[in-house]
Length: 441
Image (cartoon, rainbow, N blue to C red):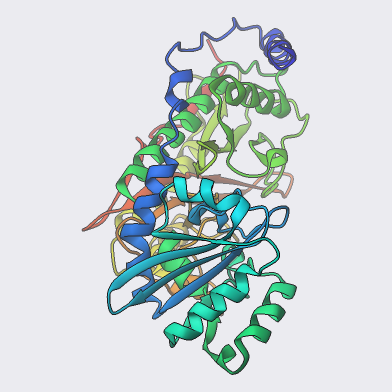
């Protein structure tokens, strides 16, 4: 009840500032999230995608340790999110095929087994070590390569704590040399999304876009602040039962002033002549996220369209976004997608933009996969040299940056989302085609 009252107070405050009627929320919104598809999708990801990822990464076995309070970041993907005592999860390939095996504390094994995620769940009696049991099995099978979650480059593949690694290496003894980083394995597995996941991400993208367009309609130039717009979007999230796609302090980023990079919305008052950026994403089912930007221009008195220069900057950014999409296809490196967009930026006379053209998006806003950047860097990051594959999903921009009269810069970044298909790439939702106009009569 308190949350409802709080939400209504925020809505009332925003609408009073904007002098607009309260938005009518669609009745069908709440049932959208009643049945969580993640348990079934997780099973499919393990059964369909993980064996192929292990082959691609040249891994025979993968050991993941899960426990409460300081869990592995991959725990939710393997069914270890409810671990209390330490459980040892094993995935492996042998002469009979792909298998999953969990050594679980006996007090948790029954519930884990009932989830029907893993082929075998073995109960380990209280006082015994699940890791010791797992190592005994690994030695018995004599695997050549055993991936563990230690990685200098991928946080999602770096969940093994120092004390766990010390204990593991002690138990492995002479076989410690078989332990390898799971960096490539996690990359190969998480970077690909199933078609069912892409459909959910389409919903997340559409909500993020629709909320932004609605927020722009509520702005009253000279009264509404960037922070007011951000509060409105927060209320929409609450009412629709969705969560932040990244840290709540910076989601959404609403900016009607000079470039601020990744930041929070401020109390700047939105004025005629401003170009407004909203960078916003929502999370569905506490798993899948979106990352979408929508841009608007605030009309000055007597204007019915954006000034010629602003309109051209918008067209330049849009063209860059379209060029990036056209470059996306299986086998193309991330750096080449970046180059396609930046070639247009150079021709259009854009100022330098430090950010990559795009990044993977899915389970987090900056997900695992190829980086769409690096074409202007003397030392591109390794992820920019990775090839795109069917099923990868990206958020990507078309940039145009210009210097304003006060010496600051403003960047239009036409950010959309796309999935790589068999022969190219396609938008998750319809892209923004026109600069949104705020104010005027």
